[in-house]
Image 1: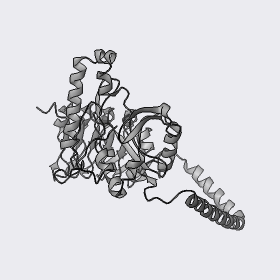
Image 2 (image 1 turned 180 degrees about the horizontal axis):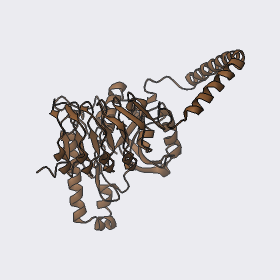
Image 3 (image 1 turned 90 degrees about the vertical axis):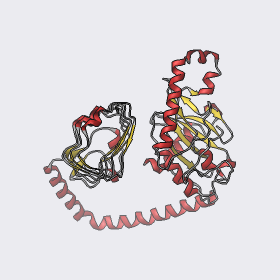
Image 4 (image 1 turned 45 degrees about the vertical axis):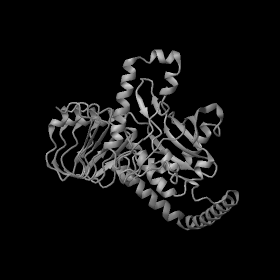
Length: 401
């Protein structure tokens, strides 16, 4: 019986034929990855029965026909990738119910019509939507939907008339603006070089999330009032943790690294690649890592905010420990076991935590366990004796906070 199966990764195995409808019976499945095979014909609607599914990857196959509307039932789905197939028709309207969806890739198909009116599609990059038959909507690089032909024709004629009348004046004004703009940029760069010493690490990698790193940096500094102690929720050997409420109302945990640790980032590019690996980890019992910022003034890591804090905090509080009954404790043990199994067996390359303690097991409002602080000490201390290469892959130890 496969009803208890949670993770199924059959990527790049040269499998062919039809995707089995029986997969719909794996009701506890959290991750399904069939990418890089030769599956053909349609996506079975039975996949829509996997109501616990978080990650679905069917990319790089030979799938055809329309996307089944039953997939819209996957309301817990966070990541969807059906790119590089031959899917056609419109994206089902049921997708507008998939409010948990954060990452989507439908590129290189034959899809057409409007994209669903949800955040995942609005925030998708053009690369994740390109090479289709004619999708439209409110997303980067796409044309708006339902623009009448008559309006287009009238607008085109009006534009031609305006260009013919003001072309000489426009050319002169454009040249003036270009010169002024170039001078402004040069002056701004010169002031910046004089104000701050050049630093190879003075940049950020929030771009792994497809966001403007400079803006996010400013938002975090503003949300914590320049890392004021009023927002401090924890402190350890490697950094101080702050609670930051972003303008989007999302709350994140920000670990501001001590200066002695940021100075040890001798190979920033290798560090950046490893942070990208960690940021792509998606498991319900692992704290999500959103990114890292290295700046001349502040360097910090950004994580998902977990409401109740550490397991140690709860079990050392008499009042909270009483409420933390044995069923909840058993559920925490199961959650931590599932997280470690995912890190060891479902990540490529595997990730070894090596230092599970009550300090880095965090609990949310439902007392669900979330493993944190894996990989940071390895990333911050590449020359330390605590760094171990394990079976040709990364080895990690936990940070102090």
